[in-house]
Each structure stands twice: as C-alpha cells, then as structure tokens.
Length: 372
Image (tube, rainbow, N blue to C red; front, top):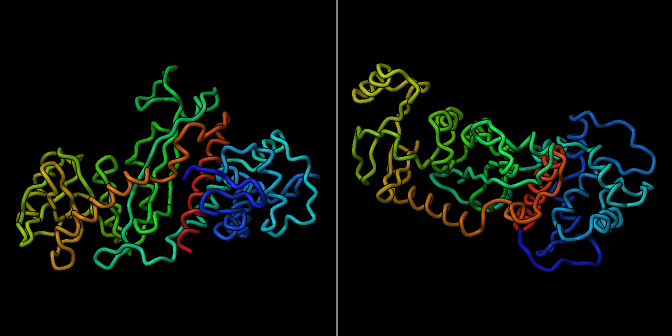
C-alpha cells in the first residue's frame, strides 16, 4: 500500500481516497456475517461491545492507517458517516487500545479469512487476456512477525523443522493475482517454513478454467502443474533448469513439444513415459504431461498447455511472462506495506493471522476501488 499523508478529519481514509465507506462497498456486511456464522460466533454480543462485523471493519481500517493510534481509528470507524448499517443504536464501551484488543480476540483468527474467501474475485475490468483467457499469476511473499513465545511456536521453526533462537518468526503468503487490476483473488497464509509449492497446490483447487496461470520457478512442481491442468486452466510456468524437457517436435515459431514426467516415478516408469511420448501415445496425466516449451533467453524455459502456435505464439507467451515479472518487481507485489517495518504488530499468533487477512481484504478494497 502506498505511503504518504493520511486524512485526519472525517472518515478513516488512506492516500487515494479509500475510506470506511469504500471498505463497506468492497467487503459487504452480509459476507462478514456469513463468515461469523460459519465460525460459530453468532451468539449474543456482550453489553457495551461492538458486534463482530464492526470489529472486522475496525481491524481492516487499522490497515489503511497503520500510523494512527488504535483508539483514534476505532472511534472514527464507529462515528464515520458511512459506517455499516447496524452500528446505530449500539452503545459501545470506551474505544481504548485494551478494548480494541479484547474485541479482536473475540473475533479470532478465522472470520476475516472466511470473509476474504467470500469477497475476493476478479474485478469488473477488461483485464489482461491471453488466448481468450484471463491472465492470472501466482505470487508470494514472506514477512517477519513480532518475536514472542506464541509467535515462535506458530511461525518460528526453519524449513528443517528446528527452532533457532536467532531466527525471527515469519509468515508466508501465496496468492493468486489478477494481472490486469493487480487485485488478489485467492490466498493461502501459513508459517514461513511451509513450502511455497504446497501452498500453491492448495490455491489451484479453486482456480478457474477461464484463466491462464503464470508461475515462477519457486512455485513449480510436477504436482502444481498437473493440478492446474486437471481443472482446465491454461498455464505458462517458468521451470528450473534441472527439469528435463526432451525435444519431441520443433514447431514453426521456434517453440517445441516436450513431455513433463513425474520425477518421483521409478526410473523404469519414467523411461516408459518418455518412450510413449516419442511414439505419440497420450500420457497418463498422473505420470506425465505433453507440454510446449518456449525458451526465453539462455536460462529461462517456459512450459505451457498452449500447444498450438496459432492460438498463442511463443513471443506472446514470453512477453506475457516477462511483463508480469517486471510489473510485480516494480509495484513490490501484493501488500507491500505489510512487509515493511511494523507491518505486523501482534504478539499473539491468532491475531497475526487476523492482521494478515485484514491486510489482504484492505488491499482488495483498495484495488477494487481503483477499478470501480
């Protein structure tokens, strides 16, 4: 999220004019209440406390103005002219930092996650299309979280599973991003030691067959490529140099057909898959995939399910992948402010999860407001 001066009067706002009213428009109250019900938090609200949906808006508003005191943001969410329906008639207790903390703990880690899954979708913009499909990308980032006992237990171990006191606890976010609007349409959140490939695999379960999914080496596995292919999404994935890609047929635009074989198969099974591919037999998708390879520079190889150069040329595929990587590097990727100093402030792991999902929702509201 952009930095800069923050409006101090009227509704909570960030640079660019995103306010509480914009949050309500992008994240409707009924979807928060559906998430509240799904999480089993639909019981009576204690006297003097705000209902869960207002607490949810309050946490999201804190993401828009991270430099403001918690008490000021909390008071102005309740007093905002565009406050969500249902705030009127509520007599909340003092909007103190301690009161906000109690309300956040009652809301818990899951409501905002469930809200995100109900809200996030490609915005109604023309989008960027390739081969008649919407161009999407899998992106990810890591972020440090405050070093507390709870956060160390949830986010602390390194990839090898051993806890090292000198290592700062960290979370990992992997998301599906609309390449046109840069809005987030799906996400997975977990500890930093969780592999990006596994998180990507979870995301692909909800991918659309109307998408072209772009991906980079760090999120490529045979399983991730196969998962996208099974649901019918087109793919264009940069693969590591170690992945063998034998040339089966050179195509007129310089790309070539090849076969991706599951590296975990026994050697004899891998050889069988290669021989079948050479003979033109359609491979078992659990074991191998016939793909088209586009070489983009000395080290870059893209594998794609677009097998016909008449549908999408090698130059178009390489250009789409290159432009996506360049734009992602230029804008810092999703939720760039979340990764800055003070981006995550909670010492409680449940509230760390809550903060991250609130940031993802606020980012969605910002981007969808831009394209409204």
